[in-house]
Length: 355
Image 1 (cartoon, one colour):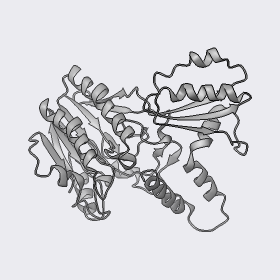
Image 2: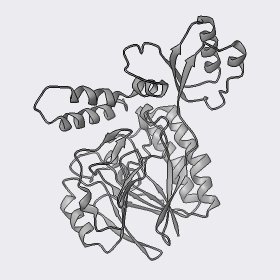
Image 3: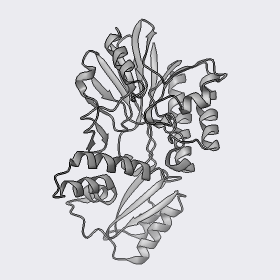
């Protein structure tokens, strides 16, 4: 059998931003469910962080989740197995109060299976798979014992493991040791949005873009085959964030008129100005972008102090706040554990972009 794998869907991301919500809905409507129908896939595993905010959920977000995901699964007879991620839980030391339980703990969705207390071993068409929700102080000992005792060779969960890329260029430095998972043939995890693999452990990555740090990064979902025990990656072709280099040295009015803006509707745009010699041409260029009805256009002109070599580096430097923070910490002449400072800044940054 084949199992569609989701993780870090973050319904309600960026303070319930309507444009991001529509981008998420578009993924399910035009990519995810069509693939399941075409391939007769009737099982979904969700590896945590179904919702975005730990403290509460917006009514509109709850309705979007219900209308565009939960009801579709129920109507099409899809079995869903969902575990709690750290964003689904209210407290940091226990998973007891969580969005899955509060929203669907007494649900009429008979095809829905929720797990937030401890790992559970499932037999999926002869393939034993262990699902592990977010590990916290309350369930740590029981979870470690369950993973040590299980006969399952496949583990899927919501883990924080040292040495893996959390976001582009930023590695986790204070998580679980990889050796903890050495007994398993394959480990698949949510939590980090950047897909990466080392040894038997793979982070599957988020399904769609939600912040500027996701720009130009691979996004999509995976399908697990219980016979071959292999993952197939299905790319999400839609981008929410676009960066455009502007240089009017050889640009004409005709070039602007023929500029392809078909993919820019309801997206976020950053215009990186490399060379602007004609204000009139520049205004026409911005008018052309605005006519495509994007959510927002930002112009980056003051980049004289950025230490870059080419345009691609300029684009990264112009938006990568985490890199700037990390470099600042590394340049501090202090004896304090810089890794801990970086972790705190990472957490603050993640909270800030969701305000």
